[in-house]
Image (tube, rainbow, N blue to C red; front, side):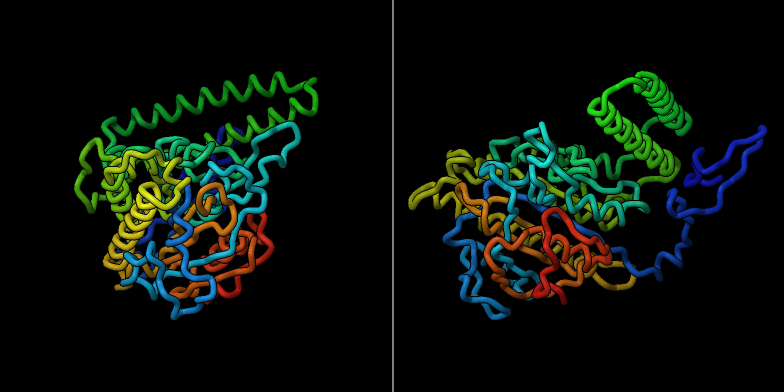
Length: 430
């Protein structure tokens, strides 16, 4: 029995074990030979990079009247000039239900209505990265990875544990330290295989006991309480799915790290740079194919020698705070340009580049100050078959989720809709 066949793939009866056929829907993954892997078409990947308080409106956005392929780059985007043919700037998009000017990422990838659940003042829905993970995450050790060095609400991100939200609209936790991410991806597990299997079995036993007790108290509950209990059961099923994933990979060695172990204690600009290196390393080794990164604001400004808070910088006016805002924008563009350099330089087995197979989005749910329209949006990478090298000015208040839906379709994921989407962006389709 190989490591991708677990206890749930057998029927038990009259003391015998009857193996089920190799069903993809229950996670069966045949091993591929090295030759097969070398000849295989490289997998698609997706990366989402979210900033908190937005950008400097006057200097980040290209002129609205200057659209198409020959537009002039704005001051805030000039560090990306060497990649101008390989990214698209999209203007005019927003999430219609957004009403919190300090929540730059909570609904950025979901487009959800926070009041959609009666009796709750905070509801969310699945984020687009997790939709991608449902399709691309079955064959990798990590279905997706969430990075988060956002230093909390002071960076303008709002509720959540990362950019990511699961299918129930619950926050997905992220890793907040580059060293932690490195070890999660590449460091060997210290415990012997038998002990790690025993630990998984113990967790399953606890889950089984909890599930039995929950089902016992289910009888006689009101509809509201039963709905809550159904959500609880779904949470248990999610944990069981993760345990099954852990078990699948128990005896498969982690990939060899293609980078040096990060130094401890990195903050701000250097932290972002190393997190970007880790994103490339994770995708390069096929440890995961979906990544999101909720980025720091306060610590970034501090690392650039600015003393103003990220919030106050977002409320800029001509003067020192506006200069801090403009400098932050340029540093983000410099770092993004460096990330694109690495994607282009990282080669796949067939000679193509990682850039050719990765769809990447950079932006925020806030444009600047307290404005929630015209979300800053940069799309790059060849993984979603989009038309790059242009400036798009879409009609005001076009759903940002139309961009996400277009990306999904370009990756071969034929979702009917996402969030508050009303259709795809035809101008973005190649």
